Length: 357
Ligand SMILES: *Cc1c(COP(=O)(O)O)cnc(C)c1O
Image: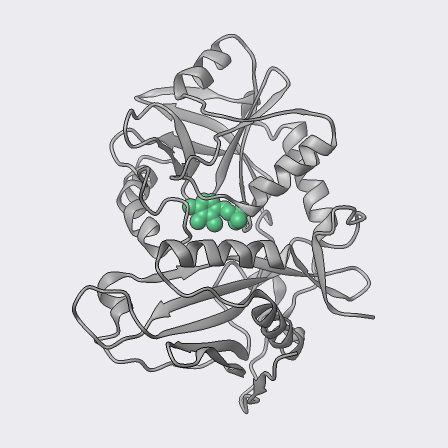
């Protein structure tokens, strides 16, 4: 057990009504932090008040973007427990992102302990209504005050907690997506498989243009041939074609989503034919033509499952499943959220208790 320091905040906030939470706007009273320097490694694990943090303007993160993040969730079960979903799997991915950005790995056990401690301290902020959750945002920034390009020697880790409202408060409705053929998100050999701000900087212009054209998100294609499907802005993508569930394989430019993995593992356990392989936009449009494109949906921690009702590519638009949420997407959503809220038995060992009854 690591000693985690605790400084209690003397100004405790009040959580807004759960219907007004939205996403990512409110933060709890405390946060978990750690420091890194070459002499001490990762040290100073502490739960401290959520507050301004001061760093020199020369800090390297501002100039060269050496930073990584995660996005995970904790849930309040019907019987009042708090559970985190797949903690160690998300933190293992955090370390893979760290490798890509030359950031020293964290000790997953220490960070898990710190995460549980800060959630325990701020447990009054874990919302209770169906669909709500406590969003967890771990991130690491490079802090050397230096304006030359190099790998930083020092880092700061934070874990912020943010109560979030029901993603589908207005209904589980399909979205319209533009297949992006002008901009690219990531290339092979680049940072596409890391959760790093750089990938989001890459995506902003395409997302803005798509929004102006009335689309919710863009679907990225491979950067070389602009032919094979990669992923959506913040989600992985799945196609159900003629009974088979297909998602692009993790070639190196695609983020390996935890929800993607969860969906693949569930579908396999149900005996569904599952393929992780290259899939072109042409194949998807051709399957639609033949009446074999049954469902399309995105997967990500925020929305869990996001049905796609329309896909538009080079001015051609197809409508999927009459723009209705498919039965398979519904079943996945109900099963994943069922496990997350403790209503469906966790046979695959995905949940981590923060509080026991
Ligand atoms: C986080 C993220 C996803 C979804 O991953 P989950 O672990 O399921 O939340 C997909 N694509 C990108 C680019 C992401 O950053």
